[in-house]
Image (cartoon, rainbow, N blue to C red):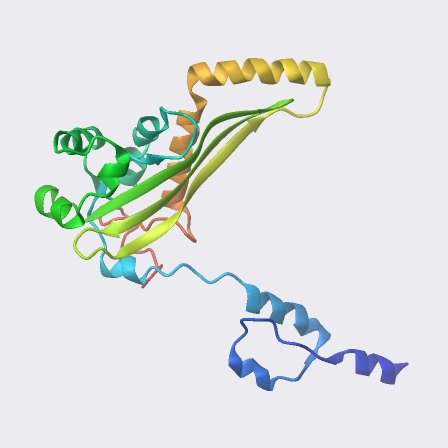
Length: 239
């Protein structure tokens, strides 16, 4: 029995795809180490902030988001929620309403056209260090029988205006639901009423604000603290 247990605790372990080549020399491992090895090989890599650090912006220009959702009001409702989180993260943010009107006055009446604006011109005329591009994917309430869910989902990228280098990209997403256990009829009525109330009070606007705040404080994949932030010197990412 002891001999059999000894054989079971030392097995030939196939290496997971993506493991370092140096591990190929390791042919026999105790069973206790197998799980750790698999986790290490498949662990997500930390976000690469090297370009962000090399072109750290002091100011950000936020273009009106492209809108792929079904809500025609999503672009400007979302745009009104982005300035405060970025400012609190330590960046100067160009007034979004002023930029929107300026671009419209210069022949770019839609977000799609604004997103095609020359970075060189933006840098030359406005003086922005970086431009934040956002595309809204989902926006609004979804009514699911006994649950009403408020969803905000967008993808974003921060680009250096001087060089065109992508400094950061990620997803801005948050959902907030209501509903739960109890009488099914009562929950059905409550969800319907809440959806009407949510629409009138524009809960999606608050969810968007929370999502934007979350992406500025995400310690793994979020935006870095800007030069005006007290956390700027101490944040270790990308150093």
